[in-house]
Length: 445
Image: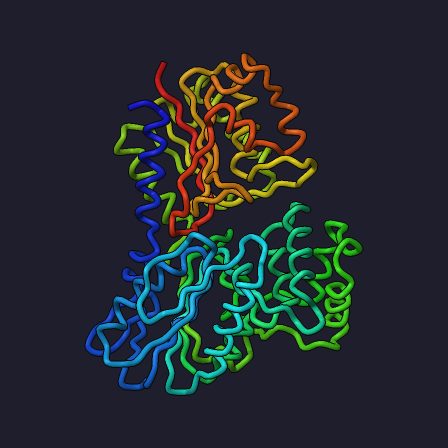
């Protein structure tokens, strides 16, 4: 099997293991007229409830809702729900309202979807069961600006945060403190109802308070933390005045903090991560070994600049080719996580494409080598590509076409570089969102 075909097979197998529908049903079952949350070993007798409410947001939330609907349709309880998903990430649902909205930048559709979700949570009583379905992308899809802040202010703030190179936990610390629904606020709205909060993790270390900005989870960040992010990346003066004024008022205790762990609103909230990047990587590792590769899973906690990861992958490729370590060829090195790109140019691309482009520069001429960088959600930055791949011949082919790789790197224009060379990975929406997968394959000469 050719290296590119092997990479496709490994990634497809990993995606299947991370299917949101399957992840829900592995963790939630209907047994003896009760919903059982397996990880918590907790039973929720349906005789205790009069209604089931589904509230979801994220790129994978539609598929998650399908699985929950398959369970609750077998009960005698009435159910309803609202799910906010990114445009194109839809699934057929019965009895549940599916609303498409903007990502990575929020839009009016997201505002309308969030209003309906918030209304459902506010209507919940003690004998209601809310099943929250939260996945990556929910920070943009759950949008309800705090008083005095407009949607335009939130969009401008999001753009600055994404462009400055801030980590997702830092970005979400700010988002939580300019929102009516993030950082545990939906849990307060839902109380005193019981909440089963099912999460697919798209963040490093699987921090529940960071996934989709933790709408049903106690917030570990503060207004002061949010202000510190702006100052760290020197963007405080570049944000809308209403945003900085709101954060400063909160830091001065003139606005109530987001709810913390001691808040009684969380007494009946049961949060469980049902899928993560580690699940994706383990499935990839097993498939690579089946295909005959000597496989090493290095880390599921990769972060930092995309270009630095590209350089690191290239250095490992050279080490395998010249020294036969850390594993000998045929070799498969796997990593997962999420990098960032500090924008310096006006080109088009995403973190995985930029990673691959930097790697291509440094493995030029290396035979039998392929690097495959891809987002599990099928989207890499503001593009229609999931990522990109390169080989030792990528740069060679580009030079024959008169393409200067340094010019494309300078302008953050990895998409157009790989578009010309046929290196883009296009999957369309995958229905899941479990961070990124980085794969280095080295064949035998």
